[in-house]
Image (cartoon, rainbow, N blue to C red; front, side):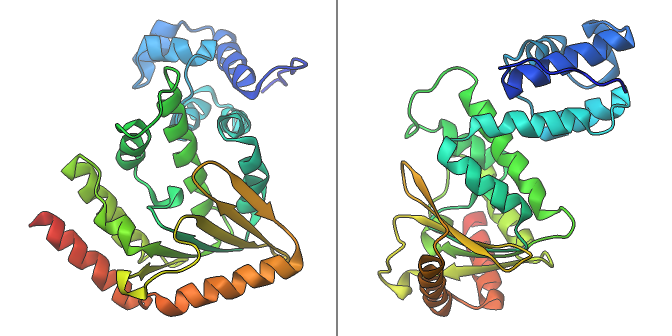
Length: 274
């Protein structure tokens, strides 16, 4: 595949759109023909090529195979995806993608374990702020795209402590909520993921209003990312990282064991079915 030159000052989204147009035109096919050969509507493909829409990762994977482009579109999609997130989150994402060990606590369902339907409801529900057209779709695609790191090689070791509150606060659509609960149940059985539930009886703790993530790289270095309702902070100071690790250890001591947590999640699923 010939090298596609960049354009100075061009956004990642525009680069991706231009690459999509280039590959199609170089192949000598029309948008109509591309729509016939794939599962995507012609108008949708047109909006991708004009940069008006941001796709899911699976779309770029399929088009890479269609054009025989290796991972060109996927790599440019990943670059464009970063623009969807807030600036303070991007540094954390770089470290998250290379981390070998992740410890997470969240009072809600973590993004890495959200289903598409759940993410869609959370981001577009009545509590959400008014955003530009297409914003929700972009956020959902970017959020789901982050989940690929759970299956990359070598797979990271991930421990997630989920507050019971997250399992007791369903979204409006019962079917979507049931799918989300079953996805958490399945993830709890993946070989590289441990899920623990922090029950209400654990009482008050210092991280009730924030999400906490600790990352360790292959060289043993660690960082902490603390995220509240409106902003996030990346912490790299060794003493602070140690303090947060001790704080996380206390949460883990209060949480149910992995096996008891799985049983708890299954009980919630049964309650939901009833």
